[in-house]
Length: 514
Image (cartoon, rainbow, N blue to C red):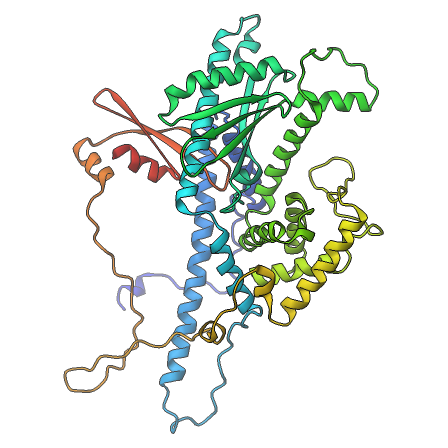
């Protein structure tokens, strides 16, 4: 108390206003996405810009951590109140205790169980995912070596042409870029952008260089075949699981030329005689736009991604749903999720998707489904014939009736769960049994068990830092989509450089140390 007297009294009146925040959260998040997009495209940032990017990443991680801690503290407060109500003696209660407000139990609980069970059945196995990641990474490194080889052999007419090179970059598209692979559908696609108009001679040159440099990149054996009709290079592996990867060659010059022809402008340069099929090149550019849109709008909604995998499996099993393209399913699922004022589970998302189709959404006399990746007003489902639209609507109505009467398992093509699965509900967490004290009485203090820190043996990274303190780990490259990046870390030990890859910088550093 004597020490407290040294402090002055708090003045009366309202508290002074809080200082304004250091930055606006919306602007900071948009800036973070901008720097992240540049890094994904392979642009080397200035050290000052990279420091700004790291600062924004740290701020964003702190926001997530604070939100998680807030939810945890709310749960702890609710748990303490629940224990106090349970431990209060009934005879001494003078007033009835009102029940604590509980979170409303979600509907479609059984539907969620069926969907998650079906999702685990159609999701690729870890062995298949490892083979896909290995093949895609090998091809990306090989294409990077091909680009450097073509850049070195290109005549240096100007400084800009020497720096740019013939190839601009390679991107994951399709199901591998969106993370929607299925166990029975492992077709992989990459888009290779060239600086000039893509030609058949350039396609054969890339195929030959790829065959030549693939031996220096990996020990695996791949069969590389150029296909001028498909405007692509087809790569297949020789061991199980058998995979097929298609590298589509295209260029933004193709779309620019089409826009000039549409606007009746004169083209300064004429197309080469061996130019590749224009429609194939435009389709590759369209798939690249769709993948970027999907990564920014749909990947963040977990239930939406799960339902899209379930619907892709449904379209492969039911003939009437087969005309639905993957792009139509993805756009419609995004519309279903974004138009709801609350987050939905997989069961409710699938129910709303079937309701949209059953309402006649795809019929000819409706507004159609807007394609978000086209400048002009385009219907994403324009390829469907009137008979296909009617069959899809009728099948969706039948599937919706089955789901409404608790028979979703028939729609998913699986067996019905037993009574133990059907009657399992949300369980209230019971209190830990109290231990008796030395005198035989129970302890009155209600304690929440704290997390016990587990002592783990030192890993390879810890041992390396102990042997060689002060090592500097450098991130040399970052490949892959936003939701599944692949980092490459390098470290110099005793004059020799070691590299390792991983899904995060921490795992990549651990692989370097091992």
